[in-house]
Length: 66
Image 1 (cartoon, rainbow, N blue to C red):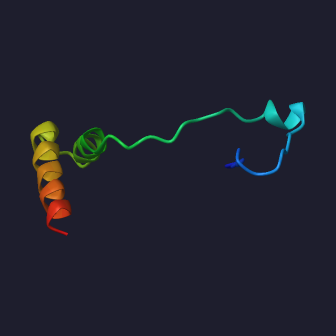
Image 2 (spheres, one colour):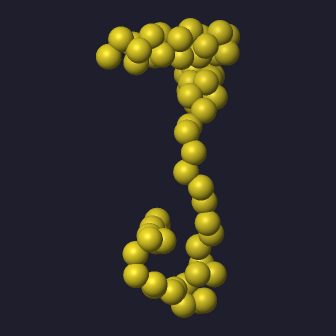
């Protein structure tokens, strides 16, 4: 279950019982290299790091051209 609370709206305070059930997280950019490496390793490739680096390079080139 995800709970999103806006901090710039009117003041809304969650009860402490509800707040204790959730923990705070921060949204950051995903590490594409690590995601690709684990996906390639899970698919059984022999050298997932090299393949992941090449796939990331292809993705970056495609992103630049769009």
